[in-house]
Image (cartoon, rainbow, N blue to C red):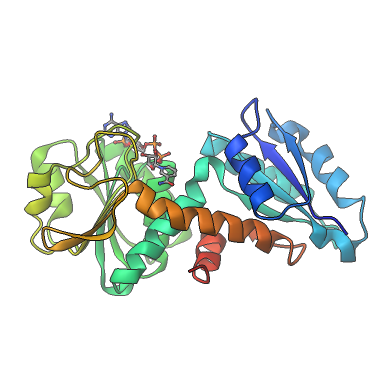
Amino acid sequence: MKTILIQLDTDPLPSTFDRVVAIDAGVDELFSYGGVTPEVVEGLVHGAMFTRKPTDLKNTAIFIGGSHVAAGETLLKAVTKSLFGPFKVSVMMDSNGSNTTAAATVLAAAKHLDLARTTAVVLGGTGPVGCRVAQLLLSQGATVRLASRSMERSKATCTMLTQTNEHASLIAHESQSESGLAAACEGVDLVVAAGAAKTRLISARQLAAISTLKLAIDLNAVAPAGIEGVEVMDKAREHLGHMVYGAIGVGGMKMKIHHAAIRNLFLANDRILDTAAIYELGKSVT
Ligand SMILES: NC(=O)c1ccc[n+]([C@@H]2O[C@H](COP(=O)([O-])OP(=O)(O)OC[C@H]3O[C@@H](n4cnc5c(N)ncnc54)[C@H](OP(=O)(O)O)[C@@H]3O)[C@@H](O)[C@H]2O)c1
């Protein structure tokens, strides 16, 4: 039986990136819908559920994407609400690459650090990628400082993250001021820069001042680098006494995880591949 992936994209035009990955991951048929809102999701999901026998439904799956991560999350809730009984299909959510990127980042960090003994700072931690990086680091037992230009936004993101992990060792930091950034970074093993594209979050001088630093990961691919001195292609490069990764260095792993997650959707009809599930799946990707 042919595998069918139903791409529900919150943007007007379904992402070509997600379409190419789906085909490269081996999907036989790809149905792509753009401008999808929660109001229209039920009909699309039921069309996928009631057309094949429950035992055949593992050959049908749903992918949720689009550039607005919050809209994707809302769509995921609407999709899972529409599934019931044995009439289920597996679902993956990766709006703006947020889940696969965060998983690849934390898996890269886990190659070099014992995360349960790691203190990390996530700069730009209020964004969809940064807050997922923080979520995954916390799930692995790390102590996390979540930094933002605004203490208010940082606190709000920390409150959201502790709702799902009440034992989280998580502290909000303001990183706009020189002293705020220094306090956020003092004594950390790991720096992740997850700021918006084209934004420098930490200078080479500020990074060099972190005497405990073992690993720095910059996810911004568009110059200037989020971490001064880190190149986009860096992948486990030794740099001034610590290891560095750039956005493309992490991106190779991100692509592998994305492919593996699409293939995984077709192994059962009840998988929900969200942040945590994509990270777990990424552990088996080398
Ligand atoms: N390598 C990959 O495969 C891959 C895949 C997807 C995304 N990415 C990259 O990962 C990074 C994070 O993605 P995202 O979607 O989470 O980013 P985002 O939402 O655009 O921005 C993340 C955070 O950056 C901060 N920020 C925004 N403008 C800033 C400015 N001018 N100066 C300093 N900070 C600023 C904001 O935090 P505050 O306002 O709270 O300070 C924001 O919440 C981006 O650089 C993106 O391009 C890489």
